[in-house]
Length: 583
Image 1 (spheres, rainbow, N blue to C red):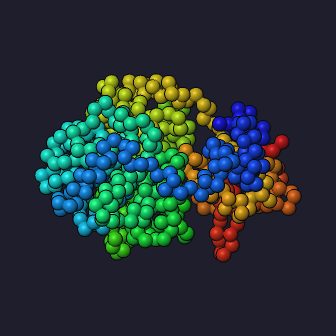
Image 2: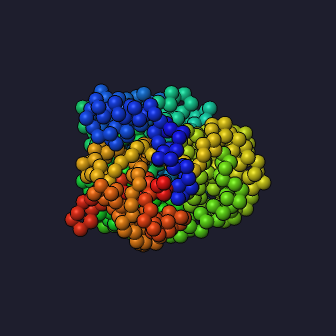
Image 3: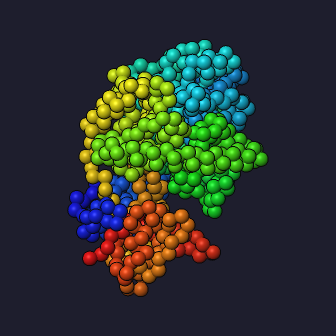
């Protein structure tokens, strides 16, 4: 919740945004927390925003997974799913895993492959081709898998796949999180917190988290027979990766999953993640941001523009040489993906601007746009406009697209409704992301109807040009100790954005352009306090030129704090999001 008044009086910044500070009740709550706990006020601002009260501060800052892990049996069909898996292991049945081609699907598959390997069993991995087969199980693939296997585990897909599952001719267990319809497919078990007969309490889990809970339940059933199962804590790196990459909100057990998983990842025990981190040139243990922006896109690259199963194979392998080869291949594909994305992004943005960026839905469609990048481009449009966005690649009589939503607007439900109304050939997803297939001649009416449904949820009602700020800070207060305290309130990501602070009336002492359009700064408060800063992409607009040619003016700056390790030195650096001239 934010104050409607312009923070520091910034009505229109150098990027054209209006700054919004925390609402008065949140500011008061932060001050009360600081007085009650002795924690620094900037940390308390983050805690207040998360709804933390004084008695719960210590627990929030040091969450224990065992205290937050839900009982797997709280999800329908969970006992049956775990029992069927254990039965397949005991009878040495032939097992196949049908996985989605994104990070969540790959991590879900790797969890199962890793667990089965430790149980002395192998599994066949099948990941559909994004272009040739599209999302989820299809009849030919399931028929073929069913002919050679006794059990098929569908992960991160399958909830809406009635015909393919019926055609399998083998037992099927679905472990998914996408929105379900009124009826479920004919599977042995459909474990999905977003089934219509679930209460939604665990609806924020990604598919890998659902798989993990199923393995917890399997471990419980094994212990009932006096048998010890694999160490599940060592698999939390995969759950953390999937949670962040699938933009699941970092609250409750998701936050605990990611914190615990990052600790596992820091031990560098999984060859695939080690090789991937090395190919991404990460110089220290990954944090949540690295999962989302460095590792996740590389894993996704195989499903987008290359071979769909590369990501899952990388995450599952225990062979270091194979991991290095797969990571190198994915790194190269990611470079190719970025080039394709840039072309589509520019065309989509131009089209969306011509259509208008103030509607409840921002959308674009283009001939031959690569299906592997439309989701990323939709995310870029969403970020630029703070509105739900859909981007569609047209080919022949159809268009295949992907959408991304903003907080508080359930895109998946709207897309699913469009499919039920017959305006889409196919569509589904979850709150923040959705996929769809639309007939070319139905494109315009489908998008009009989608915009109408999104508007009912408030999409487009909030001014896009708004920059939320959590509080004010001076350079002297931006210390390593403060950063360590703020990190305890993390990890940050979807549903828990990293804190952004405003630094008032700073003088620019040094400014120089670096790299491709970035700006390095040294900022001075005039009281002896200074802070280094960097503004990425500053020359895409007025921010870089104005700060570089400052002419002695003072500026309010807003951004996020980071720890910069360079040549043995550790210092706090401001990553500038915006600036405004101080009057």
